[in-house]
Length: 220
Image: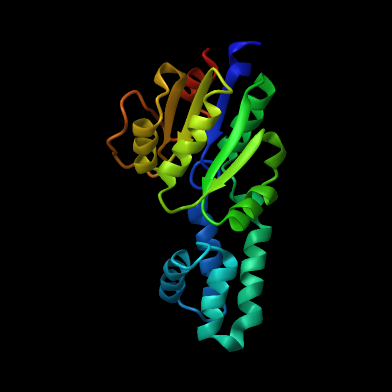
């Protein structure tokens, strides 16, 4: 096998491959159109994250319907419409990168955190689910520790793992908990442009189509 075929490219989902901010704006705007203020949407969104099972459209809709029972059908319709538009929220650079990496022979994986059914449905509807060799969804409670556990398990299967993540906290946890040496590389996908203190040796990029990412991922 070539080097790339011994490499696992492992991607967080939200804000790395998927534009979570625009996704939230979509259902926020839709709910505002039926008379629910953005403040109420935000407050119930935060409350839904604390419910058992973590955030999902079902949990969020249940909270909203409790306060606006007369809008129950319209609320469900907004969330259903938003979910149907998932492909449009995939970052175009991410889609192109995933397809190119697959064609080069890399193993590809998703390592996301959150409600398994909700995250799984977004991935399923994305249009690129079949590009991945495996998909793992861990709890959003202590996601760094959970992701470190999965990465440590995969480390024995590949000569090299490149982990793409947008959370500095998660990267720090993985760097602290997984002994990967040169076999484990980090790419911090910084789409917000803010300055962060990153683990030593981390490559920082704003998109996934940069020459830097290609070099880190493909050893070119």
